[in-house]
Amino acid sequence: MQNQIIDQLTTASTKSYETIKSLGEINSGAIRKLTDLQFDFISTSMESGVDQFNSFSSMRNIKDIFAVGSEFTSENNEKLKKITRQALKIFSQASDETRNLIEKIVASKVVTSKQAPAKEAPVKVAKKSAAKVSTKKST
Image (cartoon, rainbow, N blue to C red):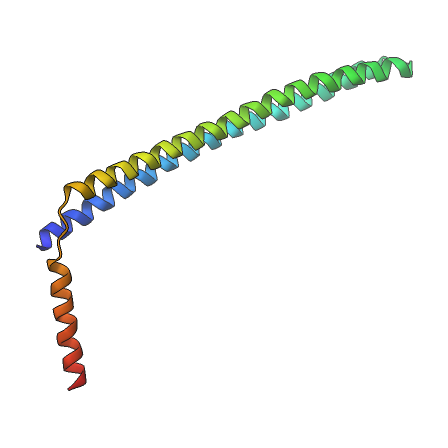
């Protein structure tokens, strides 16, 4: 009986560890991708700022400055939209992977519970032991 309980606890611990490890891999992968995306964002912003500064430094006409500024703003907005779409894709992938992991766990629990017959013997033994303890306390 004890060996069976130890085996069940070992199996449960192993499955829990594997689940947590899988979830950690999903999270670390998403964080790694988001970090790379942040560096892309910083690089894009810096390059855009330098290009804009270089363009403005040679201009003397306010009309030209506004036209070039508007063009840089449009280009920068497109780059930022692309980065935002990539971030949403990363979050969506992590969400899908997590959902698949949870579905896999739930499916394995359902199969396991259908395969294992319900045992009431430990409950009966526990009730008898509790009854003995309560009668000893009352005497």
